Image (cartoon, rainbow, N blue to C red; front, side, top):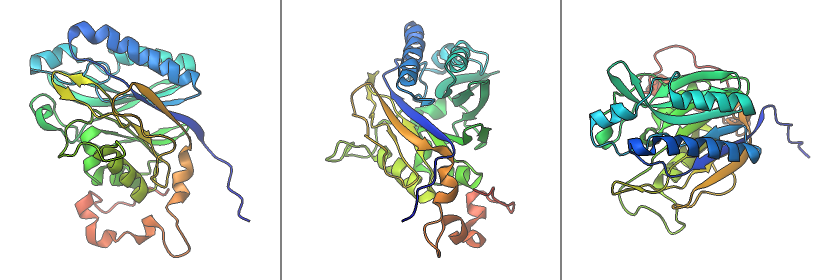
Length: 297
């Protein structure tokens, strides 16, 4: 009988699903809710916690002027500073979506924070709908080394582009953290099980790359737009670990993960593993691999 190896980097992950609302009058309560929910997740044992896209501001900016008024400098702004302080206090890794201002540029950004402070940020590269009128797209897909493993970040619409998780995994990411405001897609919005297409895209990306994904979405209605919930956490096999969240309710999804298990999960049998079977001689340039070696898993 084969003995399952002991986990090398065990974390309890949490995807936080809630309803931040746009408007300067809501900024304080949005931030307070993120801190309340991070604490709630930590009380549940989580030490890797993911919040939705634009979690401190809400999503539906009417104008660029309004977006500038909501945006903060990263990492010196009030929201990131508050998350850093809480992560230090409770020994946490936190990923959160934020509207970032850098000079005259606005970015839809995900920040990564650890027990020792700010680790890094990812600026959303694939902008959805009116985001293109407000934000500047990012131009890199970074992977961050941490004590628990290598973490890649993505934001919402990115999951529709299979190149994003594939390139992050190709750069050695052990786990992906996805901050989301999943909204309207071609109908139907939900299947008979009550799950949205983005949940299945997350499972598919996780499965074909053998990488866990923590996907935190928001819920609620904001300025006429509905958000779809369905937050989930997948294992290296792509299947959800535990539940897929309800489409309407504020909730926290938990899962126990061995972060670095993905380093061997690509080996399926004696004849097949994903990294070895890729025909990079045919399609590497199309995926942004320009000749350098990929990081070993």
